[in-house]
Length: 393
Image (cartoon, rainbow, N blue to C red):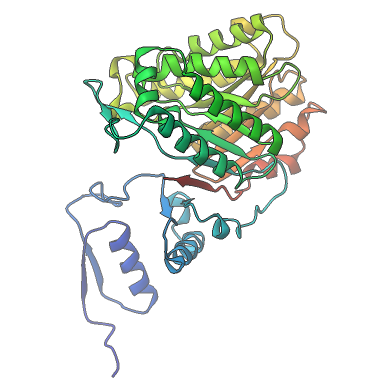
């Protein structure tokens, strides 16, 4: 029986499912397809997929569904709206599938895996977690977290990254962070094992920033691990994350640089805009996006030029910098600035880039040796490299 493809078809909801259905119907030859939504703009603000940070879940027990998720990533790549969609990030624990993807360029590319468990705090400083903290001991919580991070490290290779959230070690550790306590010996032992495994595998670690209820202690614990594992004259093993939507971000960076310089260890800094604005101390955050953008761009400029007070008088900045974020304009601006400074022999620190929106994970390190960058190398920076972020739950 022939199907009349001229009959009207109505679709309720202009989210990812509704729009995808409409697109595929049109591609199949249907000529009268209408999508209805209460929103006035597309994409619909009421859609569950309304943001620029698309995530394709690939974590399924049934390998059939994992295979479908990987096919979906190809659909996004082939879609005429792929740039509007904002390239998708593959999330999953079935690494045997993810590993079939190949980095499309061999120039300083890499993979980031994050053990994704965390605990969040609400405004009255109570814990948001599936655990109430009463059914398992602190040691058991830390053991689970340590093993999860070690297993994640085993999935990656030399040059790749491991992302760590301290609150993933459970409610007891989260409570210690809230109260400003010293890291428990069990936690220190677990982190030492993780750091030693990362060193052996040639990987690096970033410590994720978390809410401001916790961050001061996170910084102190991270500095302690940096003192032990980040050696001068060597690339940093551990990076501390600074959220530049915080009004104090510039001071935090300068404090870390001064501390490292005074004590003789190498600082590693990962710069992000911020991730907890809806569930954090609002008065500590810049009032507008424009202020946050200016903060990020200004910090990047001063870091690349070596104009932080802690860097005054230094020929080469003895720290490592990872610029992360979803804002393509900011990352490209930083890339151009690094290129210009390198060409003038004025680049004080060689940045690396972790741009989730365009799957950009690359570095200008190879060009810094000559303090110049050719057009062909710049083309590498503009190319989209496959970026995989797998989250273990």
